[in-house]
Each structure stands twice: as structure tokens, then as C-alpha cells.
Image (tube, rainbow, N blue to C red; front, side, top):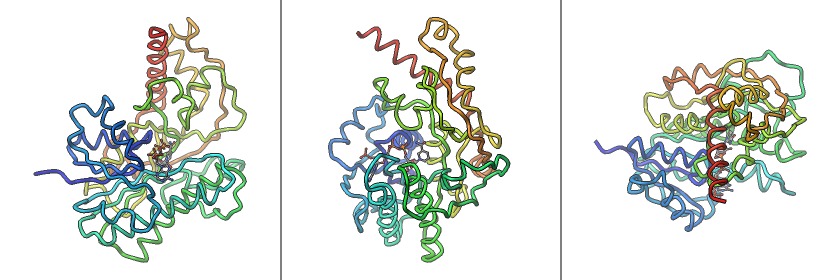
Length: 343
Ligand SMILES: NC(=O)c1ccc[n+]([C@@H]2O[C@H](COP(=O)([O-])OP(=O)(O)OC[C@H]3O[C@@H](n4cnc5c(N)ncnc54)[C@H](OP(=O)(O)O)[C@@H]3O)[C@@H](O)[C@H]2O)c1
């Protein structure tokens, strides 16, 4: 039987491109949403798309926040995976640039899906940051084990920095979905996935810049000597596991109208400075010859999360932090060595 056609947003991103790749390798047909025409050839010409490009068709939607933006894109679509979202960025307008776009995108997508009988499920990338307000980090609570039932309700502006605005935006967007479900009782169900700090190899990486971007910047810069003062929550997850969860969530056997935390090393979490021990364990030669300096540090804010529901629903275990760091450093070392041979 031919597999379903899945619409995916955010396919130009770190997580979304992996979701696209895994969906295609699992035999799904994909309608990929991009914002600009020129992104299509970039995706098609990626080495991972070799032999897979026939399984994907593209639709250009320049503004996903506009009401009705998805109306013509959902023909015959049974499942939507919605990853597109602005990340935390410096701006003078937190509300306009960070908080409002995800809400408007959801309204647009849910509105179009509501009028499309073929849609049976929507999978939305939320975040584990929706479980707690940013201010929780400065409390002395080291014991609470947070579950997918938790939701930050402390989202009122003004936001004092881009991170606070991003945390609020993800919490508001998650609540928006809960409210939509209880108000509208749609013919489809919704799964929200809540990744913690996403790490691991970036399929788009062609140079070393990627290791200093987003959450990936929590590994290589620390190994290479960066000393960070602010603590980061000690809850990581491998990007490949996050992407696989998005594709596995298509299966009707995964219960819908539920939120699932995606995180490894539960419930205790990890210590960020163990990155240095992991580097020494797996790459002693590179440490010895100075390619890996192992001199930085990153304090950990302990954060206990419970992902037992996720493991039960999806039937697999998360990759350990140790393996996640190993994979990330492997990609870094490979790129450093190839940049040295080509220069
Ligand atoms: N990375 C993490 O640690 C992490 C953790 C938890 C949750 N998440 C969530 O996972 C999802 C994907 O994150 P990522 O790390 O893959 O981010 P990413 O690499 O920055 O990718 C973001 C994607 O969203 C699109 N996008 C950005 N702003 C948009 C806007 N205003 N309108 C429409 N599309 C927009 C981008 O498209 P263009 O290429 O066209 O800009 C890109 O495809 C997001 O929802 C994020 O909140 C990420």
C-alpha cells in the first residue's frame, strides 16, 4: 500500500532537514514547505537527497503566518509536521519578532487543517522550555521531576531578553494548541513534541561555523576553551532522536492529543563539564595533539525531566549524552581535518 503524504514545515532547519530525510527513508511521500524558491535547489542537491528527491515535492509559502496560507497546500495530506519557528534572536521587538509569529503560524495551519478532511494528525515541535518559566532557573529547586503535564503560565510581557521571549513564545504556542483542541474538537488529533537542548551533527554543516550556532554551541566552544558563566539546564537530546520521534509520531499507534518530552539521561540529567571527559575518552590523540583543547567550562543547572511516557509510546530509548557528544565531536574533527587538507 502506498504510504501517506506528509506536509512538513521547517525543512531548511537543523532538525527539520533530518525529519525530511528520515520521513523519505521511511517511505513517506513528503510535501515540503519552504519560504523561498531558491531553497528548493539547495535541498534537492544535498548529498543525503541522492535517490530520495523523487519522494518530495515542494510548495513555496512566503509568509506562513498569513490566514489561509496553507489552504492550497493541504490537498490529500494526512499528517502535518510543523517545525518552522523563529529561534531566540536579538531584536527591538520581542513580541512582533519572536512571540507572535509562532502563534499566527499555528492559527493559520490549524485553520486550514480544520477545513481539510484528509488531515488525521498534526505533529508540532514545541519545547521542554514550555515546562518552566525562565525565572525557575534562579530558584533552588533541584528536586521536582517535571513531566509533560507541566506548562509555564508565567508568560506575560514585558520580556527582558530574547531568551525570555522565546520561552514565553513556546509556552504560549503550546497552550494555544491545547485551547484549540478543547474549543474546536477537530477531526484530527495533535501531538506536541518537547525537545530539551538539541545537540549533535548538523547535516547542513560544510564549515566550522555550525558548531558555534544555536544549541550546538554548547559543545565545541566549551571543549575549545570557552568559559561560560551562566548555567545551562542539564537536559540534552540527540538531534537524530528528535527527528525520528517526529516521523514515528506519524504512526497511529502513538497516542494522539498528548505532549511528549524528548530528552536523554532521565531523570537526573547531565553535567555539561563531562563534555571534557568524553572528549578525552574518545579522542585521546586529538586531545594530545591539541586539536581538542579541553579547557573550557559550562556550569549546569540541574533539571530533572520524566520522559517515561515518551519511551512507552515510541518504544525506543534515547541516545545517551555521551554518545551525543561523541557524534558531535566526530563531525567537528572530520571537518577540521578536511579543511586543513584542502587549504
Ligand atoms: N534547537 C533546539 O535546541 C530546539 C529545542 C527545542 C525545540 N526546538 C524547536 O524545534 C524547531 C526547529 O528548530 P531548529 O533548531 O531546527 O531551528 P532552525 O535550524 O533555526 O530552523 C528553523 C526553521 O524554521 C523556519 N523559520 C524561522 N523563522 C520562521 C518564520 N518567521 N516563519 C516561517 N518559518 C520560519 C526556518 O526557515 P528559513 O530557512 O526559511 O528561515 C527553518 O526552516 C523550532 O520550532 C524550535 O523552537 C528547537
